[in-house]
Length: 397
Image 1 (cartoon, rainbow, N blue to C red):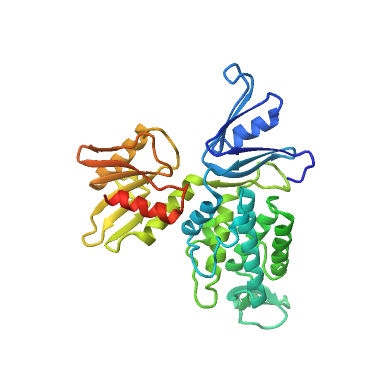
Image 2: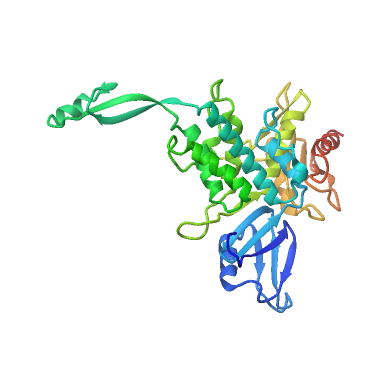
């Protein structure tokens, strides 16, 4: 993003665009086809494409810095405001102390989306640094000229000539995983090349506030999950969920060496599934319970994992099996139909539902054997709360 000659091609997810023969170089073609086949389809110029490049975006949004001269920006088909709304639910960020929706009138693109999240995280880290980073006791072993903690007698006996003493002790330190997650994420955002100058300054300020106190250790999104929170570090929950989002959706560059720009890509299919699940958890009637990604074992080699199963709380019998499909087909694909019916049969569930973000041209509502199979819509094109209520009304009708 820093090159003066940088050419940025913009496309919307699930959109197909054609470009002149000289628009895309051989190097760009190789990188897109080898490294980003899950994000885009690229067809070379041929008679079928009228000697043009044919580029089709899949269910991802974000930014791909292919090389110093070429980048691809994939815009979401859903309103940016709803992208924030999905994120609030999917990453459990709906709380009074953190509101994405403030100031969203200025958010119109995926750039704004990334920048607002980065700014929010950096400002909250700066605020926490002012209060003091959370500290905990960690075990350390060092050779010292004085006694601290417990002496390691066997080590001392082995080397009686060594004047330094091997000691094991507890140190009250901020250099712990809770803070290392924040520091690593700031480092990651700072090297993304995707922030505006204003936001870059705030991110650098947060980074320098932690520098020298916390060591830079590589972290993953899994490190942000199921951490222990209590009254001394309660606010870290929001920080870690934001870090999880960035680490989930920022991937290593395909280039070797130090990079000035890293890919940022949101898997909209995964985000949609997480959003629907978390929205249902909060809004299902009290007599129903939701399970996500439950493992249905057929035998030792075969098992299924439906997206969502809704149970009756009274006797824990399955009432609905739901499978989210982030796409916009005219009709239900046969494979999707076979999949959801198989889930229902294996679980002895009377209803199977395929959930789409937009209404199908040909909706489905039929019995297959004893299974009622339907296609329903949890729309992303309108107010998400209204869309959710409309979805539940359809589901229970």
